[in-house]
Length: 184
Image 1 (tube, rainbow, N blue to C red):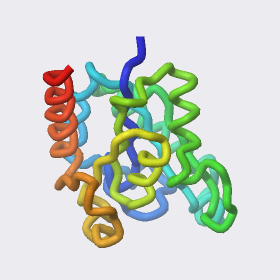
Image 2 (cartoon, helix red, strand yellow; image 1 turned 90 degrees about the horizontal axis):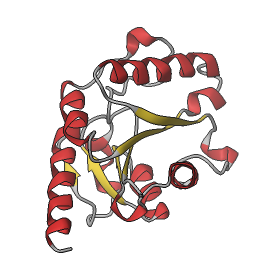
Image 3 (cartoon, helix red, strand yellow; image 1 turned 180 degrees about the vertical axis):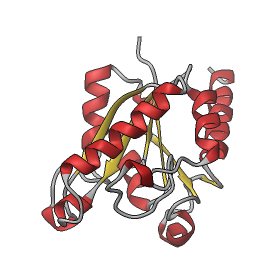
Image 4 (tube, rainbow, N blue to C red; image 1 turned 90 degrees about the vertical axis):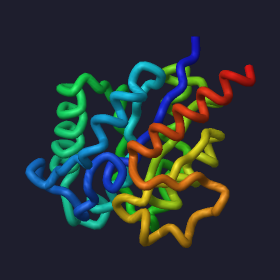
């Protein structure tokens, strides 16, 4: 049976966006992150997709980014939230790689590997590239105003739902899920 998934952007969605993180001591989860994921965890598989161009720009090392990523995954696991896989693009935009959001590369890999229900899956992020990644993969997108969300709001297609933070996004997804199940 296919299970739907939620793909989360890392910085600005799950954790505070403080630029290029090189130390786990810089990681600060939004207070509502744990509550939001708790609401969703029984209904969805979770994945994180993060663009980490600081590696390609020489600002941080792959090892530093991996340590931060692992810390995020481990901290969530300690709260009972399992991230099935974390995908990280190390490239700069000008590298024209196949994996940097808005490319759906990582979503497509996850759908194939984990037998995900595309029709009922979502992506949550604070950049237009997150929303476009979801659109390009044929899944639904939710924009959050945390992180860079306020700043980039004028850049997004006004048809996307906009939420104050990840908790509001979680509630929106559960409401949409309930509505679509009622119509089935």
